[in-house]
Length: 387
Image (cartoon, rainbow, N blue to C red; front, top):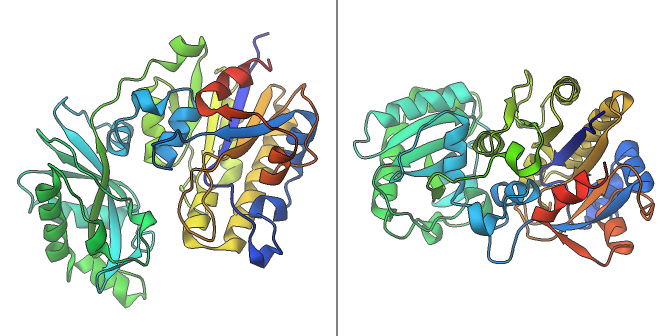
């Protein structure tokens, strides 16, 4: 019988020691018996998911973990999200991720406009789209949307989650596409000011979406199909457009899970059930959970620990039925202290025969016994060798 493989990816799950946790990381403080068992009974180590010269982000890191060297294949976050929502880009188009954000007095207050709902975001973007003649906006999930510029050349941009609490004037787009991007941003300020959606949000004590913030633009990437690369049928489970886009670009099956939100309230157990069902027909399933990353961006120690514990419960549900090889890891750290991504290596654990060197699953344990640092694109070959 052909071996089956499962990767559980806790986005942003790794961290630094936190004073509120008495010098422990959230991974060390959380109750994680299932991840600890995988680490104790299998193999563990450290993985560099963000190559030198690349920005620390889920796009770079997840491409790397799936075996697609970002230095060769990465073109930007925008086109990956375009693939997720079914937008067909021309070779000359530039697709930018387009956040709905809250800026007050020139300061980036909230990179997600209070995690605005998808329905509210769609109404705002519909109004904005009528005002734009040289660009198109497409609604996505919550604050995560898309801006497409035809016949464009690119720009240097800054992720809004990297500049929370900072003056936005210091981080505006530059480069060939900058004039048009700034035009779209200014238009959104005008359109969103006094918009019924924002008036309603303010009346309920919620932050308004004051404008759009475009970032990480790129052209369509050309990824070798997953089944050709590894000789396996692969699937991906995520509530985040970026991950779905990577899956579609790689020719993987994108598995939709009701109740998966990409936020702290996601349905972990539904993801477990759908993963088990998918593994009946697929050889490999990649389960992405966004919640730890969201907690890191919020700077919430309590929410991050809770998200990790719920992810561990999800793994426990899977382990009751699944007899294949399971791996667990973050894509990158999202430290509570900085509230943004870092490039530090992340711990990983793989079930099955191993060195039995780790007593638990954590950053410290992965460093304690493993001097060798694995590169991201080597991870899946390492995983598949455990079969």
